[in-house]
Image 1 (tube, rainbow, N blue to C red):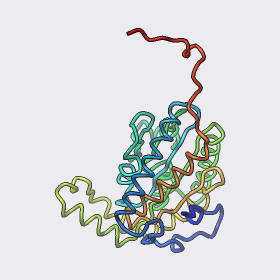
Image 2 (image 1 turned 180 degrees about the horizontal axis):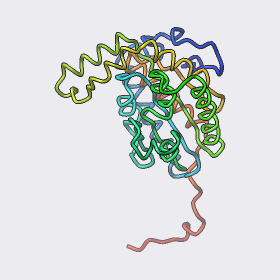
Image 3 (image 1 turned 30 degrees about the vertical axis):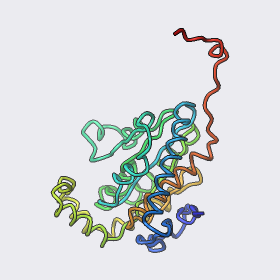
Length: 271
């Protein structure tokens, strides 16, 4: 049985990403075949619970995926939700803000994308970009960054108090694994479209990004919206762990299909 709490970041801790190895494979089983079977079973269970979640229309799930370029955010979505009906599941990606978005506060574009009742929403990147890339490039100072940590905590507390379950995952890959995946994108014509030369500029700032992630997660991993560091050099390990986190969250909701209306029991459908 997986101990999911071992990946959880404690609030205001002296947290270091070095404490969790990106090549850890603790979530994997005895063989690749066994792992694929387990992942398929988890996908089926998630699908069953998501169907009830949507039918009940009471709870909301927000899955936040953050990580360095090529850490596997898209791949996570494909595998974790492989069995799910698209109904009730939505993906929101956050790239560089538009002029309209820049004219508002930084949380404006994010709040518009949060899940409604019965929905699972996956954030591919998120509001955390506004305490990561902007801090690494010194577009905001330390004081503003701390203000944003507090604002993000308040924003997420508001979401949880109004029925949203938040699961935040940092996809933890090594610099060597990122290099291999970027090279694969260059070498494989079916993946070259994913390659962005600007990613190399951000890669050169790797130590600054690690510090920014450590600071952000330490300041915003709360009891109501915890961060989990997901070892992601192994794609299978990553997919299994996030599937288990999501399945665990769904099970805790004790979901039930809505009761059958009494008048439905007297309805007869003609031939």
